[in-house]
Length: 208
Figure 1: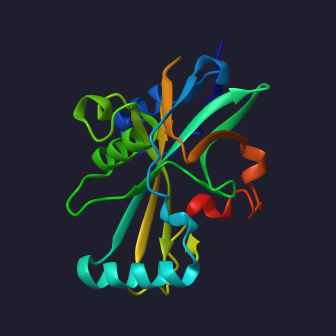
Figure 2: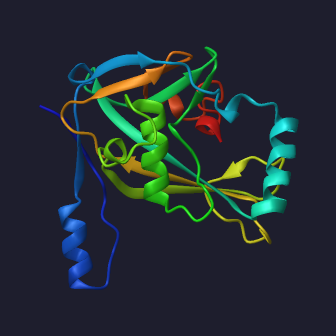
């Protein structure tokens, strides 16, 4: 049996929206033991391990060329010891990141997230059949970066004139079983949700 997490529905004015919300009352999460974990060739190191100065320079160059940067990340939940855990990629035995990354120019959120999930967690990279294997749910959070050197905020402050980056978090609805194939230079770890709160070493905005 899986562990069901209830999601409190927001107030909606229309009957159709209310019915849709009722169908999405909760998300079923399954034991970690239901999933298989394997390895594949090493991938490029995520940019979360950059120094703050290097990241600021890169963001500034990208903003000048393309404008607002949009990143998408997946929140994958499993059950362990009767408590929900989130799957995080660990890089160089230190940095923790949610699987995901930057969208390509003109790329849709869901399409880009499926591409990123396939490149990090599937046997094959960037193929349509692998991308279709992911069930992307609702957007559960958005973070904004006001300046290239600033930390990201989970809201848009009123004094933000021209945000430099938007980071979107999407809930990924996992099936009862599947395989995760992770690059050899990374680890996929199940981290208790309780450890992400006010824990800069583990969380650090989970890679933002």
